[in-house]
Amino acid sequence: MADARPFHWEFVPEPVTREVFRIEGGVPLRGEVPISGSKNAALKMLAAATLTGERCRFTNVPEIEDVRVMAETLRDLGVVVDHPAPNTYEIASGDVEWLFVPLEAAAKMRASFILLGPLLARFGRVIISNPGGDRIGRRPVDLHVEAMRTLGATIEYRNGYYFATAPGRLRGTEVRFPFVSVMGTENILLAATLADGHTVIRPAAKEPEVDDLILFLQKMGADVERTYEDTIEVRGQRRLRGAEHHVIPDRIEAGTFAVAGAVTGGEVTLTGAPCEHMTAFLEVLDRAGVSARCEGDRIEIDGRGLGDGAFRAVDIRTAAYPGLPTDIQPPTSVLLTQANGDSRVHEAIFEDRLEWLTELNRMGARIDIADNQHATIHGRTPLHGTEAEIGDLRAGASLILAALAADGESTIHGAHHVQRGYENIERKFADLGARIARLEEGTISTTS
Ligand code: EPZ
Image 1 (cartoon, protein in one colour):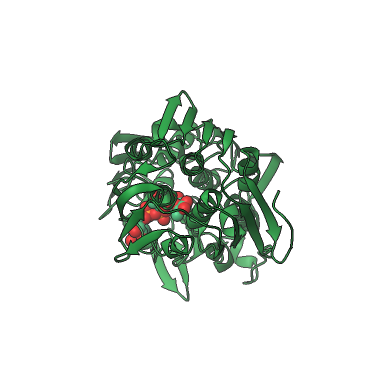
Image 2 (cartoon, protein in one colour):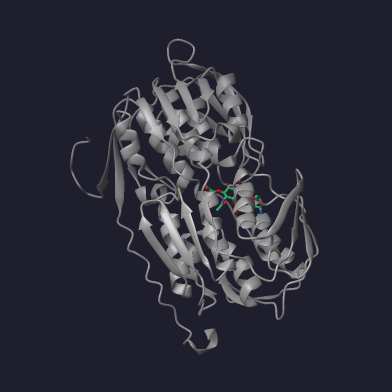
């Protein structure tokens, strides 16, 4: 029984090894790069597996730090998590004995909050840490909590933890969000699959990762359907069964490697890429003069640009899907430093996602940040190597892109931020010909 356990936590975070990326820039990247499974789909599915006591099996799960943290968090709840082969996870949640998601998990990964919905729906209670904000903004969870209350949950907030209970079953109802939230949609969706009755979620996020989660839930026997573009309807079941699922490819990783091909003036083919989920980004590439040819699940990027490696300036604005993803704004900003003229960037989703552009300025870019939503990139500016510090996942990947495009050597500190969301990033870049190495902080060594 959960209550019989003493109130202490056994989660021992792995010590973060301070590592740096050492990059010698200026090499046009060439070759093929395989795109891994989607981080933001895989994390939610691993959580969804707690909706049943039967075994679930996932393939194409990316080998990244966030997945490892989710697996550890589940294990500490008493869930059996096997990792029988690379990119494959098996989960059996028969005996969940400890319905407590600690601060240590939440501090490492905001996505731990996705466990609220499934644990509450299946076990009727959970204590879960407030994930708080991070380097890209405040990122509250008020929408998740309010919506869960409309399903009949009682949720109190004390000392940084949400104490959530739902004696009996949650009750299906109409959930109206004031604006679209990806994880808010997913949390309610997961909870509603085991609720008593019919739930309508509106406006529901339209991201492909949400649809992949719906597909997995349907395989588990859930009665879930996207009835309109922005509406998801769920008829709750008493029980769900185990299922198998192959996670969709990561459209943000694909976009990151597309920009790498372009800014280095190279020719890169993305294999296993989700062309159909990347329309808004591919339009930006097209307007900028980057040739991107989709054929099935391959995207061929030709970075010769307008002839001398320059591109056209483009104004961009991030938006919920099918708009330009906020997660691809930082890589796109690197591309726009190599475009002739002024490009305006409007970051409409997260409030602190432009701050890292000051690091790009230290590499030779000319970017004016007007406020936390607007910046102007004055191009084209040559970039030069530097020493920089990574603050978050996507800014980190983008600093690598800038360093690959720059003349000279760069040392980028804080490699662990990038390992949260990109599988083997330095190996993949090295296979394309990049001179990049991941080294322990303080190691003096030449790049390979
Ligand atoms: C998901 O975050 C992704 N994370 C993010 O990816 C992604 O940037 C984001 O969606 C937008 O596409 C995961 O899927 C794990 P939101 P999520 O709720 O769901 C505000 C990456 O780099 N909001 O759609 O947390 C919020 O502050 C990451 O892979 C509230 O005000 O994002 C933001 O301004 C980072 N209250 C907006 O809504 C809430 O309760 C949209 O956020 C929830 C959100």
